[in-house]
Image (cartoon, rainbow, N blue to C red):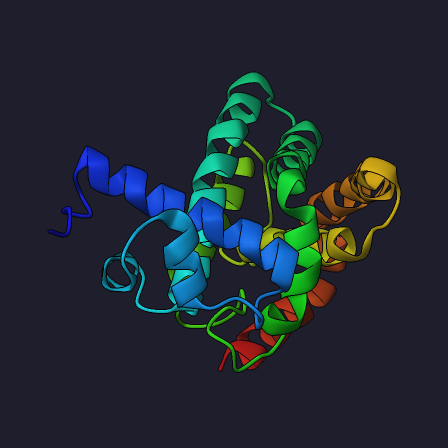
Length: 221
């Protein structure tokens, strides 16, 4: 009998399947891991595994959701303690790296699939939009209390998320001990991002800000 996915036991089973899958992805790579192998290692039937996750892609999307939830939990502490944009942005971006660090080996092996623009595992895909929307909303909260140009106010959360995606890309390829270079990149780049946000308010730069706004509008169409 298949346990309801919403029950406590169902959530435990779902989490076990995710944990096992990530371990097998680390050992054998994404393409080298089958749903049958995941089910066997997780001690569930293949049908039960498919009950919780329709495919390997769906399973990874479940991991995205899990990681985003954990990141938001860490970010809450930062947002509750910090009032300045620089500290808030730095803390939230660092929190993602802190939370994702145990999955570093998996991320390196998995990146080839996620970087395919046609893959549902791409952070820009329709399938990953719920997690992407949650992440963009989180960066919107990072901006709370910050005065920004009305011209780019609605676009800034997504721009900060794109900046964070650049950090993630660097992190995937960072071979330094404990990804020390990634943390250095965050420390050095966050002040620059904050300066750009602050400069957007000045009337002298209005023309440049309007150009950026038009560019963002055009590429989204």
